[in-house]
Image (cartoon, rainbow, N blue to C red; front, side):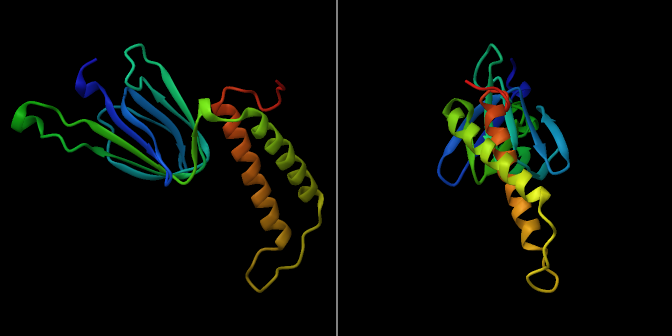
Length: 174
């Protein structure tokens, strides 16, 4: 594959760098919807929602796919720092940088722990979903039950993303 047919990819959290390399495409979900980045993609900065990030062809000639559970963050797409084609004949490579607060590579996910978290979050969402709406704690604030429900739904989504990244169906048992 020619150099101009690849992306430079980085997936970084505050704790570590999970991915650095080249790939043929990166697939993820932003606040605006699902998106696939290919070489030559227009510059973009976007908010990443909890999702499975798929990096296809990470430094692998056979097109292997790396999967990671990403629990929110930002993506920036631009050009790397290589010279312009006009100066040296070398094309500038498209660069995809993902900055995530929390992310896990698929092979590092503890699926049993993720299942326990999924069960707990499902139960909490069901419990809070049947509760009555409470009075706001202060003018302009949402009721405590609504905040708790939103937090429980976010925990549920994180557990689902972890299991999806690990290639395990959320309802399946090991």
